[in-house]
Image 1: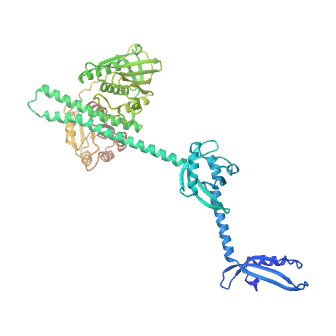
Image 2: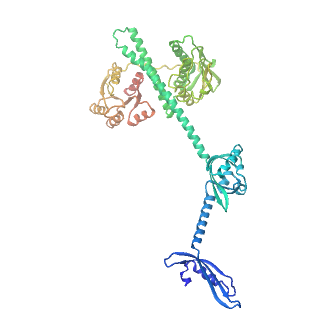
Image 3: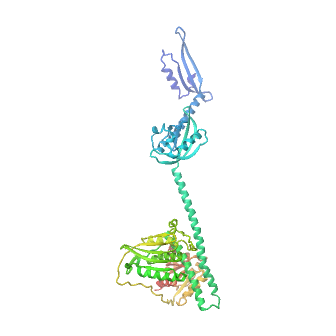
Amino acid sequence: MLFEIIHKEDKEKFAQVHKDKKEEDNTPINVEFRILTKKGKVKWISHLCQKVYTEDNKYLGIRVSNQDVTSKKLTEESLRASENRFRTLFYDSPDAIFLENYDGIIIDANKAACKLHGMPKEKLIGKNILDLVPSNVRDQVARDFSKWLNEEIRHFEGFSLTVDGKSIPVEIHGRKIRFENNNALLFIVRDISQAKRAEKELMLAKEKAEQSDMLKSIFLANMSHEIRTPMNAIVGFSEILSDKNLSTKERKEFINYITQGSNTLMSLIEDIIDITKIEAGQIKINFADCDVDSMMDELYATFLKMKNKEGKRRLELRLNKSPYAENLSISTDPGRIRQILSNLLGNALKFTPSGYIELGLIIENPNQVRFYVKDTGIGIPEDKKKIIFDRFGQVEGNKGLDAKGTGLGLSISKKLAELLGGDLTVESEEEKGSTFYLSLPVSREIKEEIELKKPAPVLPMDFSNKKFLIAEDSILNYTYLEALFQKTNVTLLWAKDGKEAIDICKKNKDIDLVLMDIKMPVLNGLEAITAIKKFRKDLPIIVQTAYAMPEDRERSMEAGGNEHLTKPLNAEELFKTINKYMS
């Protein structure tokens, strides 16, 4: 009867125990197995059976005892599963785990703990936890150990020590547990080196962003000031010119002020465009022969006039050329050299109230020249030398000499020097002055005679029998172009938007050239160029626009434009460009 209800997986075990029992053996049989109840539930049974004999050794039968031990078996299985889970978590955890007794002695550790400290398990076990922390925090760890026992601390950030003495930032979680019927402390220790590095990088990025934001705010404030100052002169004197009672002398003087203000604005815009081109990697460097002697003479003459105009007649401007500079030609970009040296001289003029400014040249070896601009001005504080070549980096002047300008000049000059294969450096002492050095590689060639190439004069253009279309939505800009072409005998047509430009080109097959603005209503200039080129592929189209970024020129060329000129237009450049297509 019992055999019938035994679980099928335990029947063989039950039968085998009884089968292996020898007839003369009277030891009890004790076996645990499962049975199935009438309701199909599984129960665990502890089966005890033994042969029974009389005092005179007469066999009476078998005494059998079956006890339900289901509850006990389930408890044991649960405990075993729990222990297995603990061991799996303990030994396979990616975090370092330590078991310590209440004296701080390690009694067990997992693989990650061994890896963290760089030592095998047998060396870790038996060590005091104080041996695994840096010496400078051991006293504090010892004082805090009782707090872990009292559960006052359950989480802590500290440092662990590797076998080679390296200190590692760690996050520690701990609590009291029972382990093998003894009180113990379980510590989970996580290496947070990467998190700390990320946190530090984040803080540095935050500081850099804040500094950048501050510099941009200063830049915008300076830009506002620098734009409004010349604009005040342009707008103010433009209004005064409407006075019919002005003398010819006054009128010329006011026009000169307007021109100066316009040039100042253009200089600001060029600075912004240059730094954008440099950062986009699209700045143009045009290498050619540069006559050093003549260039330095030109710069000296220009800034001598500027110095006197600014009322600094007592400030001495010096020119110190090396005796080897005569007949010296450098293979470089003459325009960029002038730009860098002009910027350095302009800064020196701005920040030198008295004393002297010196433009000079040093030739220390045949392969390198060093231009320098030295002044006796306010100088640069030691802690500011690092930022003056940064974008928007400026040094506040003292004695009423405020830092004016965009703060881009030295940054542009530094990058241009590097693009030319050289460098721009500074030596300075506060209150005593500064010396900027422009070092450049040189291709040195002595010439018996130097022929200076002078720009060919712009001859009056005769565009008789030519017809140009000007696509421009601004009446002021159209009027300006109309005035430029007044003496060229050209026939001008005017389109006020891109769609009208397309329609005029379709109706007038004899149009010889188009001047196309980009930002126009209805249809923009790029769309108009693409459409016109479909039916007039060979029609020259010159883009004339206020969009001056490198990518703007690319877009004009991609649309089908032949040239890209930026506003404000230079009359000489405009006529040269047109003449190229009319010749």
